[in-house]
Image 1 (tube, rainbow, N blue to C red):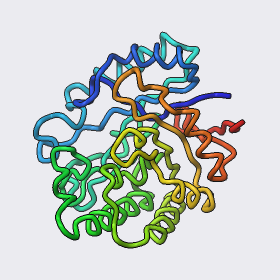
Image 2: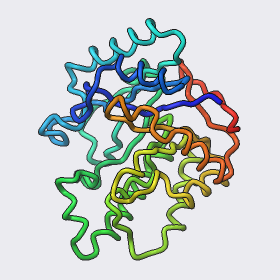
Image 3: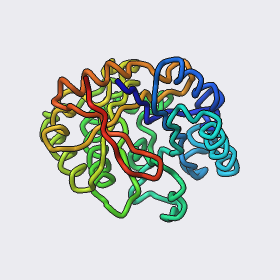
Length: 271
């Protein structure tokens, strides 16, 4: 069975480690057949004042060339050049054109900011503990996620870690099922893929993104699904990929969908 990872980072991202070729070698040792590099698209100083969250603008050509060099040198591995692009909603302060993103094989859409606040930043975790904040943050997160997923003017091929708001294991007082239904409808409206992201199992939530009930909702809605480990270190490049396949199968999926070089899609049967 072909194993894929369509979400990984490297040293070029401020909070990643490891050279591109170290990820490639680790992927090949682990039996991966597809590896997508998706370092974080540059943020402005307003969102990344410590230059920790994303690739610096001046380093983007270096990152892209390193991926393209790895592709040329490793024809036995399908290497995709991509980025993870934050959706900032009304707070967007970058001028990103279609041409800016056209060179990438895959663009992951992510929501890491709620009203300019990095809600998944461990240094700001205490905000979650304030009375009523979990309800408010979850509501805003899902609103923004659905905006991003449904807006066909945006170049998002895959919506990554769909329920990232659970990272620190703070949950709202209300039933999440109606939100799951909204998220599935939004992904359908935008013709998005979603991602099973194995990194969630190693945060406080101790659960892969998305939750089984949300993954089942995506499957019922006919939303294609791919898999990523969200590795920020080469040793995690293939972590729990096979487990993600099993979770997809249990949710009703029989195929993993993969973006190809040039932006098309192909499917891999889950055996």
